[in-house]
Image (tube, rainbow, N blue to C red; front, side, top):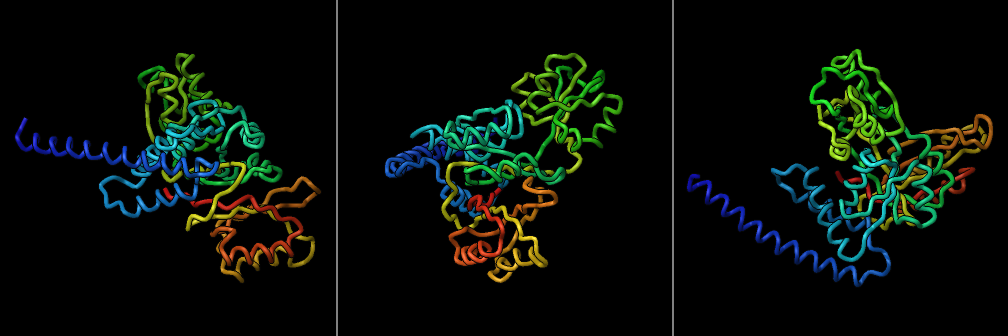
Length: 354
């Protein structure tokens, strides 16, 4: 080993010693804050502020995503010194929903797999868990209808969002592509990997199942079978990764919502989600959108869905920039209350930082 290499490693060791002392000091301060807090252990607005400040200060070479994951783990470990958060997600284990929980809450949160999106909502509504994470839309496949339907009736609030890049992997008991006769996956994942499958496994039967975790479980039991899903599923079900990043769209991203009994306080960069419907009169839709324009509130999402209350009647799901406590947003919502035939505020929450 060269002297130069030894010197560099000695410097790394010294930095590690300093990091341990600094992390311990941070944890002790977090404990003091925990004792001063009244009730809520997790403050989404505060953690969002910390993460944004860290990412703004980053000058590399660590990429923003890696640094965000690192700090999520640091905050998760500090929270766990006081108590453990319970978070329900669409299971089983080995799904992108589980990855979204880990990205947002860190690995020290108690992640509870649920059999359906409905069950995630129920667990939050009954207080069985503190939080729930549900998919709401995918950049290539569109909205998750069941989540939108349940948001219409739930008393739960949105307190956060998670943007998860979808990195699809092919996994199998076998160590090579040759001999793969079946490919299991969720229907959305199969659709997202059509071109790769057509090029590399054109003869393999594609079988849609209820989740990517279930696909991995089936692939682990069958010779000649493979599964498509997140890399985490391979380790959980003892499968070999045959190919990574096989999705057709490199920027494919799923957006998840974090549900709780309450929403979040202002963080400085927030969103507010609404459900509304217009009266059946000429110009009604224009009237619904006017309060946003007049008060300079930017709308980031507008989606219509049948209301189920009557034939050809629709409700509109709207995301706007800003917190409901912001003066311009508050004015817009007050005007909207007078114009809409139905208005439900799903909550204000920090916009995803990374």
